[in-house]
Image (cartoon, rainbow, N blue to C red; front, side, top):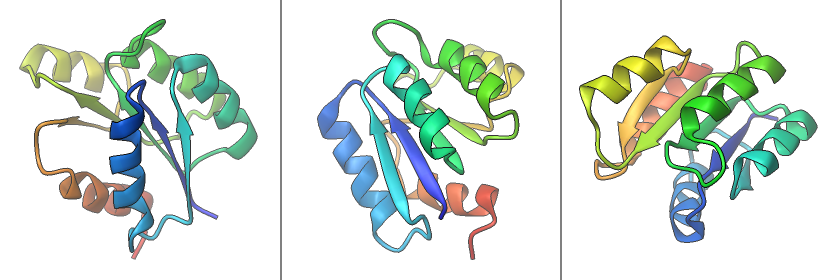
Amino acid sequence: MPAVLIVDDDHTFRVVLKTLFEHGSGFDACVEAGNAAEALLKTKQVLPKLAVLDCSLPEMNGLQLARELRAISPKLPIFLLIADCGAEIEKEALGCGITAVFSKLDDLTTLVSNARAVCGIE
């Protein structure tokens, strides 16, 4: 069962992402986490097919969390969401193994189509 892990401390934004992934995306389940500790625990329990992380989390930023997730699941595709898409942040993110970086201000339907492509979902 392909599941997507959505990690963002903003509950409303998690609901928006969950809604996008639940409607014909090809993913069977969405697992939500409001912080890094919860994300790590749920990753161990569910082993998602994709993780979508907010760059700005309270106790650990998205880049740090991505490294921790890689330790649990080395081949896990990870998408990073940032409010201000700068080339420097994107370069650092891709350098630490993040699959793709998206702006929270862009059309998020492209995130879902990219998720389907990365995960091999027809």
